[in-house]
Image (cartoon, rainbow, N blue to C red; front, side, top):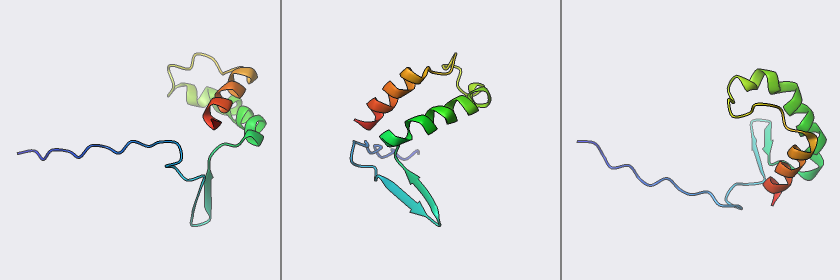
Length: 74
């Protein structure tokens, strides 16, 4: 007999810490000052990652990415 699975927790803004540091590795949320570096990283890796992202027909424009970052920060 299969066990009933527990409901998965719902993450809300504020549930995820701003920074996680594990054994010298820092993971942190995007910040407004990351906009240019984030966009360059998206463009540099788009061809490689596109194979795994069928929904991404083209890389975003700089304006589109800035809007997405703004939404993510709010």
